[in-house]
Length: 314
Image (cartoon, rainbow, N blue to C red; front, side):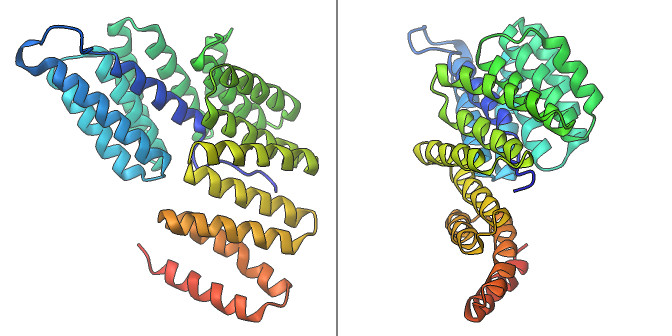
């Protein structure tokens, strides 16, 4: 299995969910109508953050970025510090997923300013951990370590779960595998407390990655099967496909080419159904050599044709 990863650490997604919930509290229906539709705009901004979060979960990062930008414009129009902090923070996650690291850092700097103005501790923590994640994604491990150290001790909250997950990613990147397992376990325990199933799936997926590096294949399979079950419950298409693909990689590492192909075919079908071309292509590229190894010439020709068509998609 090597080092399987989510396309983007799901801790980004956890932050997006919390942010959307935070904005959803602005302008509650029991309050009297505000002049000039201020609450309407805040509620519209919250809706666009939710749309963006859904697009992000489906790996439609360009569309997520557009939704987050609309949310930011709406919050800026009514000068809502908390809303602007949440929107800038969400923008940074989509920018990171798209490889726009400089833009992401600039967005996080704006989010940090507005979170401080809003005096919202939850937003401040979310922005701080996203700074650590952005540093980690860019390979700035020392900076990521410094930012996470500044947040310790981690709170026993949803934000704390995100911090532990990010710490696990950092420990894994630095080769501290037992510490990585411990961090993912602690993140899982906190997410389990509130039944955050999608985040639990991410915790188990990354724990399986570490176990695979340690050659603990049976334990890795158990974690991946749990992640798959959680992702199915949450109808998380991207996660389901990645879980199947990782299960296939484990099977191949154990010498089971047939099992690997079966799992990868499942993954490819999921990605195809969701229109996730890059993920489908990556999976088909894994399937092709196995069809050769198994002597399945018809399947080799079929999947080569599929890959050729995918290569034409821009």
